[in-house]
Amino acid sequence: MNLCYLVYSREEEEPEYLRYFEFLRSKGYIADVQPEIVTLEDLQGVSGLKALRIGINYEGHDLESELEMQEIMDEIETSDKKDRGLVKSN
Image 1 (cartoon, rainbow, N blue to C red):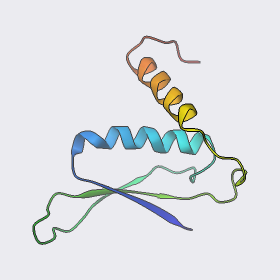
Image 2: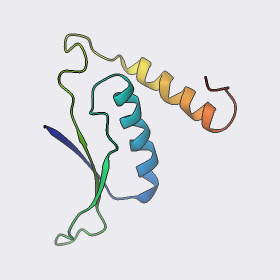
Image 3: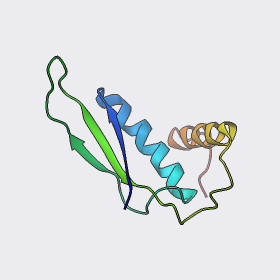
C-alpha cells in the first residue's frame, strides 16, 4: 500500500488535518482506516515533530476526476458549522 505522511509541529494542527483526511476518505481518495499518529525522532535543531500516516487508495475513485478547491472549502466550512452546532448533521 502506498502511504502519505503529513508532518506537523503544532498539536493544534492535528484536528484540522484529521478533518481533511476524513473528507478525502469520504471521497475515496484514502484508505478506509484511521490515520496513524507517529512521533518523529528529534533532529538537529528540530524537535517535537509528529506525522499522520494514511494509506492512499488509487482504486477507490475515478482518477480522471479532480476535487475542486471550492468543494473542499465548502465541506470544511460545513463541518465547522456542524461541530459548533450551527448546522444539523444528517
